Length: 199
Image (cartoon, rainbow, N blue to C red; front, side, top):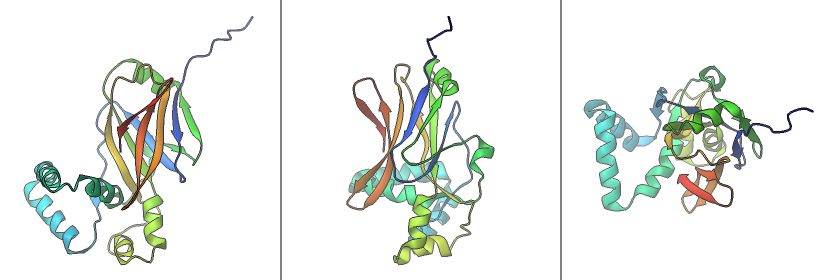
């Protein structure tokens, strides 16, 4: 009689309307991420960031957003503006998941079961495609003013912390529609409910 008990696999469900690539790592991933926010604002941000350093700039930006209640808009725009200009996802270990499909992995389940802090990064070309097809001048500037090409990907979620998921069935990658547009969020798939991690 064969062994009918199968080892549980960790599931990553792509519930968006577009394809994604994901990677779960034990250490923070270091990608060559560029900020392609167009116009004078984007140019000024990049200059200040280069002068004072990314870490200090991020800390100041967070404080300003909190003071002016602009956090939601910042997160939304960051998903569109944060881009790796040249990457082959599979060479970095990313797994492709088509829209509406799932990826099941025993290896990720083993990583999760250790209880150690893990990190999730998501890539997609969706926002770049939207910008290229848009009639919006700002969207076109992201494509025209930077060396965006076939190997360019948005990084909507970058090193999102994963913790206490030993009993979770998996992760659900979702599209959240807001007044200012759509963004990508990730939720934990539990036995009875879904608890949001990051959006």
